[in-house]
Structures are given as structure tokens and as C-alpha cells.
Length: 288
Image 1 (tube, rainbow, N blue to C red):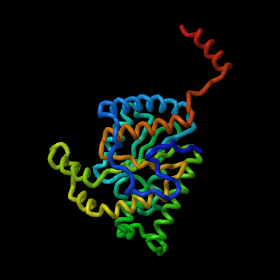
Image 2 (tube, helix red, strand yellow):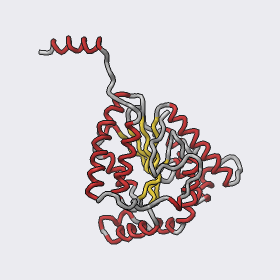
Image 3 (cartoon, rainbow, N blue to C red):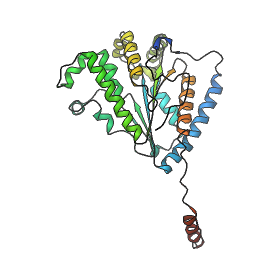
């Protein structure tokens, strides 16, 4: 199975991650914005080449999972790193409030059918982790799920972490490289971005009163994120907690990690063999 590449932002696999210690701003001495944009452009070009090899090889798929608080930059990061990839080679799924049909199934049902096929890059903008993040912060949402057993909340979250790990390990065993990114924005930076959304007419549509209601629950969300990342960061499905207060740094970092991990698969265009090459040479000579 795939094994995660090392990074200072890799969430440990032993449950020792402390969100309060995770950086939200770039380290001192980080490159200037122009350099970061050049690095991102290099990653975009490399990802385009890797995606074509991924498709031709047809043994692996890639699933990128993005979770974050509002205004952390999920949409713009996805757009930035995939802008050079052939649209036929990727698919982006955004998971919002579950529908009545989705609530009639187990919590993994709606994501299981949307995982990427071999040769493609899939992106989850929010994901199955909403069920141990938003639902943990708002346990009243469980009433709509009509669960058949009565469990304590702690038992329920433990079972859901176990189900998520089993699900992701199954995907990994069958050729899906899973990379999960928590875009770690600070509460102060989120406030600045909310103000910009109000001040800029072209951003007004992105802001709602509900954003402030969720912001008021910040500490509860941080507890839910720390618990979820500790319970589900595994070598075959790692979490990376990326500093998100500086968007150019965040995008360059995510792009580099995607490329480094995808490169480790050793994918390449298939070798058709000498016999087939000889057949193609004959066919070539017949073209008039």
C-alpha cells in the first residue's frame, strides 16, 4: 500500500497530535509570494504530467480530502492546484447538508459511490468527516439519522472513527492513494476574511449569518478536529495540518505534497513490449 511522505505538517499516526501546537502561519524565512507562486506553478505542471501517467497506468486512483473552518481557502486551493489538470482526469465533489435520501443510508454511503475510479484524481470538498466534525459539534443532527441503536456520544464517535479507518484502508488496499488536508486557519484570520467578504461586493454572496453562528462554536470545532485527526491519520490515509493564514504558502505546500506523494507511486506510461512495437512499426509503414 501507499505510505505517506514525511512533512513537518504530517499528523502523527500515534494519536499525539495537539492542534494548539500546530502552526497557522508560515515559518520564519518562508519564500516571498512571487517565489511561492512559482513553486505552485511547478507543482501544477508536474501534477498535469503525473495525472496523464496515472490515467495511462490505470492501476491507481487519487483521493484528496479537504476539511477546514469557513474561509480557510478550500475552494481556492482546489482550484489553484488542479488548474492545469485535464478536466477529464479529475472530479470534484462537494458534500453539504445530507439529503433525505442520503439520511436513509449509513453515513459513508454518499461518499462511497463518489470515490475516484482508477486513473483519475478525485477531490472531496468537505467529506465523510463532516459526520465526526459538524455532527459532533451539533449532536442534535443525529435525530434526523434515525440510528437504530442507543449509544453514548463517545461510543458513537469511536465507532465512526473505526468505520472511517476501515473504509479508507479498504480503498487503500484497492489502489486509492488518500491524502487528507486540514487547512488550519486562525480565528483572527478568519475574522479578517469574513470582513473582506462583507466589504467586497463580489464576495458578499459567500457570507451568511450562519457563518457567525458556527464561529461562536470555534473551541468545540477545534476539539472535534483534534480528535478526528488523531483517530484517523494513518500511513495509508494521512492527514496534513497545513498553515492556512497565508494562502500562497498554503497552496504551494499542498501542491508540493500532492506531487511528492503521487510521484512515490512510481507510475509511468505502460511499456507495450518489443513485439507490439514491431507491429506498430509495420502499421506505421502502411499509412499513406
